Length: 626
Ligand SMILES: Nc1ncnc2c1ncn2[C@@H]1O[C@H](COP(=O)(O)OP(=O)(O)OP(=O)(O)O)[C@@H](O)[C@H]1O
Image (tube, rainbow, N blue to C red; front, side, top):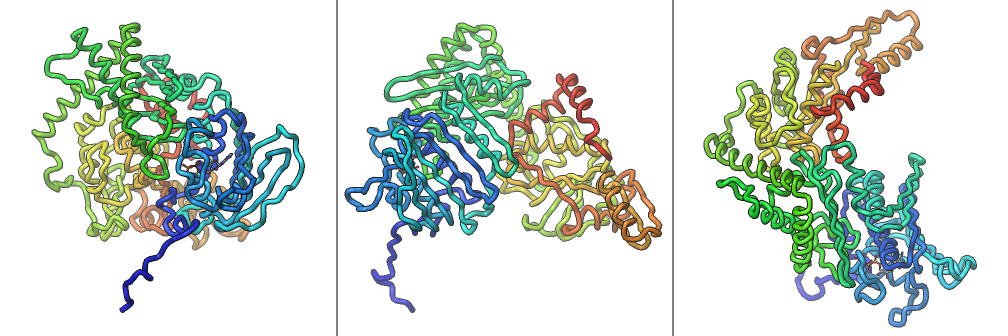
């Protein structure tokens, strides 16, 4: 046995700890958080009043560069370390200029870790610094210095700034590609939150350029983002508060949907989705609204307004700037500074109270919205006690369950129609594939509260079969790893698939976020060419196959069969084309750009938007080439 003494205690130095446990310092799904670290440094220069422009380029080879016109990283020799400032910054953890508030008053950076993490997890980092009338250049590779700092050219004394270009190392990330959508949204939000800062983003992959300068800030942003949706108030309620020590900017409105379509919050421009600042906003709004209602006797006797009732349909953007924010962890997803809750709550309560009393008719509508939420909650609470639907595993009668319970394997197919359900039952692999046939079009649940959808039998069955209640955050009772929607390949089938997707997007969003929902793509055509059989998903694919076959052999006899529905395929065809994992087409439902998805779905499904739908169909009707 190895002896266990002091010599077995390892001390990790330099950037080793980051390379050993990257997950402690960054998000390892994709390198976007690294991009954020570099961008945040440039933004910190802008908040401090030294930079006015940031240029970001995403290159085809998956490197990223961030350029600012700030002061430039220090290049002189560090008095204690005996190396240039930039080298210390890049190679030492906890080296930074933001520990005191002298150089940067409000800054997103505070740990002195960010760019060292980028360096530790990149195969190459190149830095250009313009400072003191010279441009300097230094490079690093896998966390170590590769080339010395040297002066490359002379520049004007006023031309200052930093360019950081890095290529993340694939070994540390599940997916090495940057998400351009996330990057885009992140950059846009920085521009929103820092009025007058110009941000340019060039994506070399799709050759698209974006440029943002917001003069008006948050209010503008929220109403533009919600453009086309019914909001209350139409012009968002806005708070702008500023002292030398802290700033609060926030913009709030309510929509008729029971999800927070826009829920963005920032601390010193860092996206910090939860924590004491958000809690403060929640309680400030609730207290003001409650007071308003009590004063006017608006609340029915048996009802008590809770923050949840006020929060349910809200959309907001909240930005605070404070000195010394305390975050939990380097990814800064949660703010833990305690004094922030009361700071935000007090300011929001006071301003919202004044607003409510100045806009009484809109204020009463907002109050009504919250009261209805409270009433629905009361009703469903009663119903749950009576029915206790999830007390036992009484699965729906028409579900043909599978044997395995291993979520890595199991799949349930929600199949349109009993006859297709019958074929699917014969075609499936009983071990891990379950079938739940659905009758016809399920209810359009877009504008229905999650608490009420279980009254519909088909939806109740789906909910029981998958083992989850609507809006569950906790997926531990999920019964299948993949939930596959299987409808005919025609437009009617597409309608049914859309309705089922709506159900999951709206009422089981966690399942979509975690990638459990799939749409199966059954073929529309079978093409027999001599003894060969091909399947085509649509007209285009059919034509390509026919062309190819004819090119190879002119005399071959070609027969094309159009499937009218899934029920028309025999079980072996259905198995081969739609259910067998190595030959089928499954499309995963994702929620990368939730606001855009939400708006499109609203246009497609909202009762009030028939006119928008007609216009869309006129413009895009030929997308359905089946
Ligand atoms: N673009 C830049 N312009 C000027 N100085 C910079 C720039 N980028 C980084 N720095 C300097 O390098 C220091 C270290 O940056 P680093 O990203 O490692 O940590 P941080 O921003 O201080 O804190 P955090 O770890 O929370 O991001 C900063 O504090 C700042 O002094």
